[in-house]
Length: 276
Image (cartoon, rainbow, N blue to C red):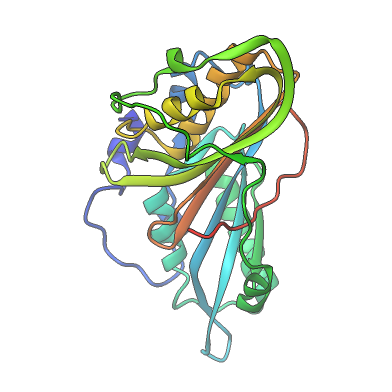
């Protein structure tokens, strides 16, 4: 378990607070998990963002009438802290009985509070239900590897030694799997996700990638660190010209978390999948 997480509200009984309380946010430093991967804030080999989508966002108009909407939050991958997920939910719930003058005032409040917790500016966008409904759901790019016939007998921890590639061939491709599963390091609840690998480099053996992803099945870690581990293991193997790894996780408690890590400076699309 991350040492800071022991003091977070995750996995503990918590009082429901329905009026604005920014002190509920609980930051967890990324440094300890970066160190596990041999990284530091100065040596990160990727750029990226963590998209959080909130489907239980509500507040009051000055008239007292409630509003519901969907919140999109983008936290830089190099921010000093992640925000512990239960504290994030408790904080958002504290808006439920709080009046705000307008949407812009609420967005500014969220931006200030979340940026203070993360340690870097956080993007905030409040979206109407109609806007999100019109956007619909998308399919992941590239080839789905889930139907490959593999034998699996290891689920307890990631096994990068399973990964194989053909260094004599250089390819550019996108592949994806919906079979990513890991466990919360605090509560042991399952975290379900879909993962995408886009790269240009030595040809990756798809069956070995699938076996590797399945090896996360009983692994305990936060969403962000699982994606970073996949990125680093593939970078070491493929020595790619470019590499992007991202995962779209199924929501829990009204929030989904979607980490993106890439060698490229690009604008990542926050688009929902069928399980989201």
